[in-house]
Amino acid sequence: MPKYMLILRGEESPEPTEFSPEEMQAILRQYEAWAGGLAQQGRLLDGQKLTDGDGRVMVPGAGDAVSVKDGPFQETKEVIGGFYLIRADSYDHAVKLCQGHPNFRFGSIEVREIDLMGQPDDA
Amino acid sequence: MSEPGARIDALVEPLFRRQYGRLVAGLTRIFGPARLDLVEDVVQESLLRAMRTWPFEGVPDRPERWLATVARNLATDALRHDATAAQKQRELATWATAAAAEAPPDRLPDEVADDTLRLIFTTCHPSLTPETRVALTLKTLCGFGVSEVAAALLAREATVAQRLSRAKAQLQRSEIDFVVPPPAELELRLASVLEVLYLLFNEGYRVHRGQGLVRRDLVAEAVRLAELLCRMPETDQPQVHALLALMRFLGARLPARTDAFGELLTLSHQDRERWDRDWLQRGFAHFARSIAGDRRTAFHVEAAIASVHAAAPTYADTDWVAVLRHYDDLVAEQDSPVVRLNRAVALAKVHGLDAGLAELERLDDDPKLRHYGLLPATRAQLLWSRGDPDAAAAAYRAALALECSEPEQQFLQARLRRCEAGDGAPAW
Image (tube, rainbow over all chains, first blue to last red; front, top):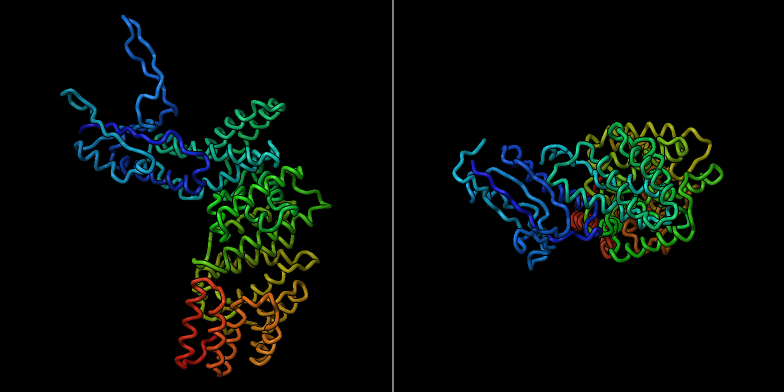
């Protein structure tokens, strides 16, 4: 079954006072409900949060040199907050699985298929 | 870390609210009440980090430890310019370990319980007005957001925010020690705490304005904090048990309550099968312990009144003579027009409708009851029962003309319609 990477983007970081403890827990519960559903179906392979900030990217410099470029890399103020690796039947199915995801409250989700280059899936 | 999404049910309890209060209590011991702002920022940021990390990595097996560690690190960062940084860092390390200690569910680790007790005495300090104490307690101890405090107290958000910031400034100015008061002060300080818990409970239990019958969160928080006081040796005192007994007796009725308007008038309609037995039992247990002292407080008397109702298997079995006697005690203890209004109902039960109506007449001119819908509503009930539906209808209309909550309005309107239709008076 094909694998997909869900790249979660959102505002850089919310104001600390934006949410009450109860609201934070409610938001967390929504994420958990979404991830829990996928985990039960065996579709959730991994999920990681990335550190805040723009990070840096290495770009080819002159000759063999590599130069490091500081972010931000895009016009948008959104940053990648984290990612999930999931299994889905098809790209459309992966998109469908993202529907109702709580991250849409904060930003977008990019769905990318892991390119197996014709190799058999290891699972 | 557990599997992502593996612990969906782990957060059903109000974990974040509870942790908020616990973390604030611990950090306030280290930083002092004067720096409550800093403490709250640290705790808020810790919870925010959990909200942003746990969706990906799953809820940790020991969320309280995760949060205490993050809070400790953030607090350490905040110490950079502090002259006592080294000392405080050691305290932070000790605290973070203690705060993450395993405790049976429903019980706080000892150190957290100690800090929470100190925080109760801080947020309920008598130098703050009762309203401010209630707001500050909800915000810091109970982990309510400003908008939630406002909703709970039916106040405007800006008003609450202002009240909270003034409270913090006051704490800063008065340099209040973060301690359980010494024996010489304990009595007075404890009274100030109990007043807050009583307000908190009543705010949740009674309906004054607006929508929603019961704000159960407030009832639950008041009971939770009162239980902590009963468990701690310094505050395990008869009047605390009396207050907790009262809360348990009244709270037991919540599942059966269909309206909150003038409970003495509507107790007759409650299905007592739906009263919470567990709450009643706990109520009687605390009531028994409240009699230990030689002093009688208003809480004792109110609990005694509630206990008479709790002990009656049916409404018809109510010992109204005992209720009236306790109301006489309450008038002696804490005379107020509202107490006298309630007493009038018991009076009517024991000595007849005319005696009750005569007592209501005496209350007519009291300015405190001028906008109190329960006065005309009670009169309506008594008049109707005496066989005067026209006068009763007029009294219901008078009640409806006053400010009241939506459930109250519905109750009164339904009564008025039945009254106008010439139905017999409902039981009361």
